Length: 125
Image (tube, rainbow, N blue to C red; front, side):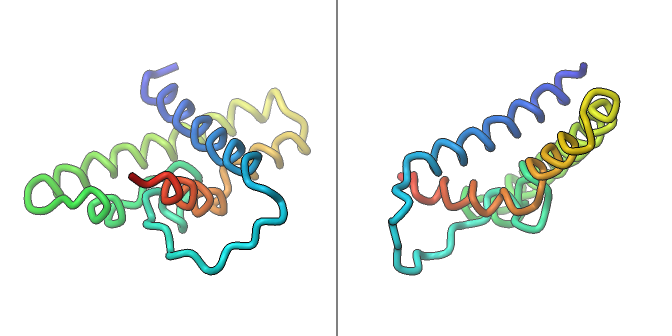
């Protein structure tokens, strides 16, 4: 296993763990008024764990050459996340049942990133 693959999987596991922990800590009956939209750190339109390039530039308040360097780094990271996910799914086909594969797909779904973004916003400085 490559270091990038392990890092990507570790980040995905951390993101899922944070969302699960946050969900357990919230009372089931809590009804919040429409909170301000959380900044997109993890892209809502991409697979779980993929960083939002422009959203992170904004959150980190980057500009000029630093912003361009950051965007390059984010692109490499997102490519690694996508590659690691494809590799994991390919390896898992020989290990998991179809139902377990469906669960794995659910973990990697696009719908997870907005939850992570809300969690990050709720823990803002």
